[in-house]
Image (cartoon, rainbow, N blue to C red; front, side, top):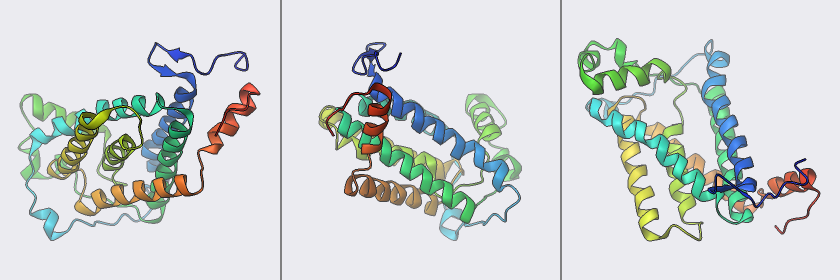
Length: 237
């Protein structure tokens, strides 16, 4: 049935099917790296890399709004990438998957942890009331501060920003928006005490390594091979 399906056909007039496939694969792998690794690493020794410089950064609960708004920003970035021509789309999502694979290795080789703001009297007293307090408690309830290096939040924000410069559409305003969003997300993960400075740096470095590998070795051809196998058609790489 998929062999007869037009892979250029847009789903909901938004994303072509060839772009939807890597999105689904990337998101599925992301869910595994984010949630599936925790049960597997919980018995490992977790390192606390909270530095004196991190101690100087104040806890500002209202930054949780930026932290949460990162999710729709990533969705916009993913959609923009998926609407590009195959080569760009496939290369970008290949880099995304490589980045998550590197994160997976880090989570097992060097698992990290920091104090849960809900368990710190200084922090918890600031999130007991109001919408911001509820939002913080909600996020902390499912996003525990462990397996932090590198920061997936920062990784995703830097990825959609860097991808913006490979797109043939979007323009200067889109690139500027993604850059400002990435910087704000970097700040948010520190101000809400979900990450430390080295986690932010790690997220950026992982993306840069993944983009380099995907481009140098043309690893996006994996998706071209997958498409050929499913449809029987040979798309230009």
